[in-house]
Image 1: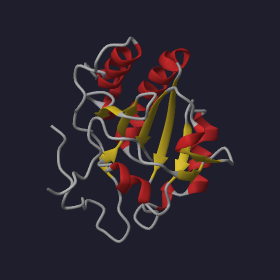
Image 2: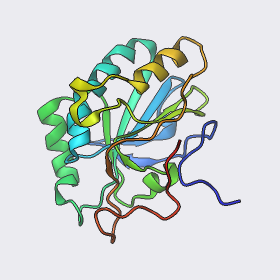
Image 3: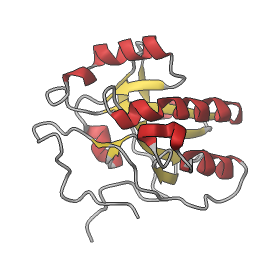
Image 4: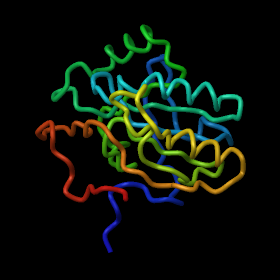
Length: 194
């Protein structure tokens, strides 16, 4: 049986070593035993821009419970020049987002996680096993009109010691911009999660 494109519930978090906009390089092992949210994001996508403040509220809500957030931009800069590292630095300086923002230039990390869209969230427990993956909110382009916040629910359940009731949702957003491909191309083995 072929390996699924996207990490499956219970899978271990793939390692990474990526530069961040704060001038440091981070590996998976740099994060302690806290719950870790890895999410694939970018600078330009209207679904990212529309939901950044909802994500900020989630980060702020769960910081006291030891949840860390790491955003990763894997988009090809040949496809979207505005997703380059200098523009990432500018975006973080402008908005002061409360997460680390890492650059996956080779797209190897996006492939290891099976990132489908921006944004696409992965919640890992203290043992770095996947407990939730999918969307943040049900209307990321207009987050103020969202009626469901799946990421908040998953983190509330997980940090309260309960199983995540809905561990899989489909991410909603722009597809990852893969190097050498049309802007709308998806890997053939990529598929909906539910």
